Image (cartoon, rainbow, N blue to C red; front, side, top):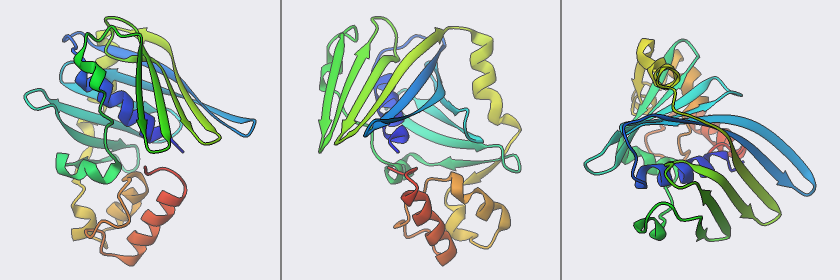
Length: 223
């Protein structure tokens, strides 16, 4: 339920922290605990000075974020294994997927042991290792739910990083705006469940698309 919120938070820390050109690849074990029941998954998060990639091994997509270092803008490309296509979001469209929390204490040296942030009823506690621009542990608490991201491995393997981010090069590219402009295109209809578009977005014109997006939100994939 809170996977994408934690992802955006890790992304925000990663972008705000100073990072060298050397690539970093972190493997996270993610556990969602609620009322004595726990679900666990594994994710890979890779970044260098220009690119951030998020790989969900459970599903047939990965997120690749291109970083504009001058203003720290992000351009998202969601790459999916369905019909070898991908979806590109403009920076202005990222607001439809949520926002990246701000961490005031990132203005101090990044070697801080713990970062804290509270937004509404959600509390985040982040542990960071000095010198690495990726958190070692993230804990999110919301009511009876606790989500823990624990870094199980960290690599600087350049070949592994290249494999993670070059995955999209052979894929056809659709812009997110096409979902409203070409609502009857079967390929776009097939990609819609992977798009994470807000069901209230006026650019989703088709009632079928709107229902699909609402169901996607109901399933807990959009935050």
